[in-house]
Length: 218
Length: 164
Image (tube, rainbow over all chains, first blue to last red; front, top):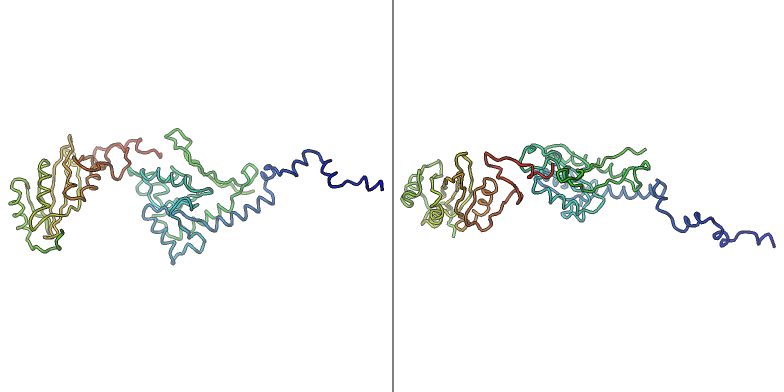
């Protein structure tokens, strides 16, 4: 019977573990999720699939591009084929701002306020020449030369105005971008979550708007 | 009470003569522009009284103000009041010279309520102030905008563009 006494019981095993291993078992540490592993990649896969296939766009129509945006919601082009048809008139319930039209100086602070009211994660699509660069009104006294002076833009769609097919193409590229997002930070090789914080413009002593670019996944 | 359109049949010549008789010495340089518009020059000082009487004119009351446009002639400004008479189905344009040194006019927004926003726009774009206006703010540009952009000598300042 002396042999069985020497066998380690469960209580024995726990008590005799080195302190570092015991702590790790008791409290799973955040550091374990700083490297991509089977848990983080699975969570990324599920979340990115859900996010990219049910985008709630914010109805931010400012000019004639808005008609193309609304047309893409109707039966002929049918944005619901992609699962993006839930247009919301409030920033609180939407996660994609489609800036469709000319942004003027008076609308600039309003656009920034509405962007700040959107919940993370959030994306911005610049639709048409005006929202991208000012377009034909580049020299206008009241026109902001591109919405990227105010908020970070994920996808630019050229055209004046772009047809609904062009809008779908831009949103499909945004979908690819969303599907590469990860919770794991970029210094470990994976793609960072887009840092979508508004920065003060350079005229006010800020760093300017920071663009977020995708890095290829290794 | 707005009459039905065109209940009074009046020729253009007759309308011009009747307006000249009703406002002797006040409507100057009356001329006819085909097909349905009479153009007249008005002094800025008498604008308010003329507007009130035109609005209440018997039979051919000009009871609708469709537009106030402002023009920069470099030497002076000019405000153009586009009036319409529903009863006669005729238009009347009042041209008012405004000095560049003191661009002030009397408001007509108590005569025609539609003048309210047009006068705000004339103030916003051309810098013509309207004495007695109930809400003399800018209408299209930001409240802190510097300058009036449709003037010929407008200089665009960087302060107007925070997003550069």
